[in-house]
Length: 99
Image (cartoon, rainbow, N blue to C red):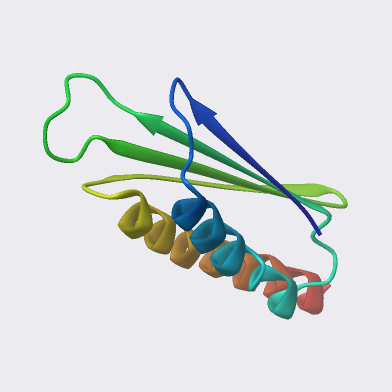
């Protein structure tokens, strides 16, 4: 699985980068079909509470799963987007199974 991390107008620290890779790599346990995952990180202006935005895109053959969250921290936003993506993935697998 190819994981690409894109930070818009700021640098991602090593600690955050490792956290993202650790979390996103867990997707491979749920589906081997996921070929590429794109993670976009953005700080929303003005810098107040709930200003860290994360967009996760997981590409699979015939389907792209997308999840987006805005939270106080990037770690919290990544956790929530991963939960959302896992729900989408389980629904997609259930639909495939029923065909």
